[in-house]
Image (cartoon, rainbow, N blue to C red; front, side, top):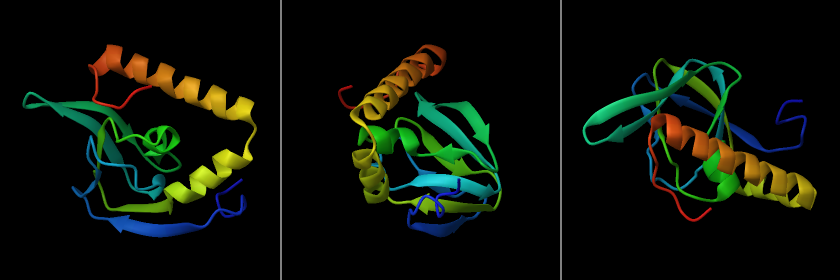
Length: 130
């Protein structure tokens, strides 16, 4: 199902190549679903630029910070002209509140495991309490 079919309000946004969607430490501003283009997920530490992933059509970024209601742990920038659908934090909060407590608990634990895996592979990130 698409976000619109789920009854979520989405807005379309466009970014130029090289434009930053968000930086590590920024508060969550939306969940970005890539319609066209490519992004680079990276971290900057001690003058070092470490690429975590390159993502394209159909991929999602910004979801971890939104699920946790914590600042972003990685930065994301457009590598090409980028067309995304944006789901606002309030929309995801409402969808999460409507889901079962079991689903919310499992999702938060999966996010914590993903953070631990990323920390081992790419170095610890700054984030609030888990």
